[in-house]
Amino acid sequence: AYMSGFGNEFASEDSRCPGSLPEGQNNTQVCPYGLYAEQLSGSAFTCPRSTNKRSWLYRILPSVRHKPFTPMSCGDLTENWNEVEPDPNQLRWKPFNIPKSSEKKVDFISGLHTVCGAGDSKSRNGIAIHMYTCNTSMIDKCFQNADGDFLIVPQQGEILITTEFGKMMVEPNEICVIQQGMRFSVDVFRETRGYILEVFGAHFELPDLGPIGANGLANPRDFQTPVAWYEDRTVATGYTIVNKYQGKLFSCQQDFSPFNVVAWHGNYTPYKYNLENFMVINCVAFDHVDPSIFTVLTAKSTRPGVAIADFVIFPPRWGVADHTFRPPYYHRNCMSEFMGLIKGHYEAKEEGFQPGGASLHSIMTPHGPDVDCFEKNSTAVLKPERVAEGTMAFMFESSFSMAVTKWGLDTCHCLDKSYYKCWEALKSHFNPNWKPSTLIALLPNTSI
Image (cartoon, rainbow, N blue to C red):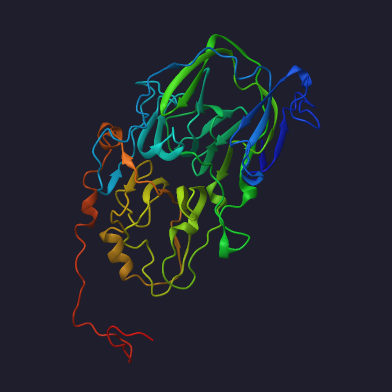
């Protein structure tokens, strides 16, 4: 069960304990049912009201009751952006491998692999992109990211996420956001794969609509937040809390489940969203509109209009532009563009770019449609047509110049080293004898 709305002030209590939320105040001397009051702050106390994020949790035992944290292996999770030399080339990955459950049990945490990123979690300014590939559920173990927010994009296999706020079932073509500091555990039901966008120092919000007006893009009512659910469970063998802190992993033990929150209220919550609910804005006359019109969520930087990261999708839609090359144009960008594919075929590269794979076009590295796409769409009859039907591609776009990890360039063995060849056959169509078809042509270097 879920409550709807983005950034709302929610209040929820498990139906097994009616009246578990204190009335009229947050921190009563004695909480209902003998619970502990605990605040989870997602912003500084002194932030303006419009950006202040916090929730009050009423739990059976407070989260402070645990043994000391100790370092643990980080596997392929890293924040070391200097382990290999920079690579400005266009990069594309074949579908990332999912370990077979018959060969090795891998849960969500051990299946995290950092592909690229930039910035620093210590200074609270940066971004990281990870893949998760796993085949087994987390048992008596949860994860907490002290560094930033996780935007999770399942690609293969649904995931059941248990949080301190309740449970969320998230399927491919849905996304979820687990904000900084929230503890969660992931159950899977088969071999499972997906993408993660992590941001340090900012939270995701809905983009401003500007001239679009009051409606369009992602509707706030379509975001879903789980209702309170608790378990009062003792774990004699030890429950493991894994904490991502300053780019490293640490673990500690406690003898009870952390999902013991009977009731909560506030505006700092996990949430999910179905990408099919996105209301697409598109060109209805001519030319190709910038992909910013497909932004679902943004994590803003301190510079107006410039994002630490945008989450952008390319959903099914109608293409109707007249006398226009309709697919994405050739482009060099001051932003980094990491693309993934949930299902189907991406319109600008129908071959080679596969579900579960990815591409990275770094700052000012040229990119655009492959040869087949260019030739086909340069001569196509421009009638109204459905674009991207049965597909869903997305982009993590960032103002940071992202470095690729050793795992991304080498260890994963998924890098497509022939990617550049998709443009090799582009040929010149230049004709110096071309004349305009109109009766009156403007003289060179003039204007009206």
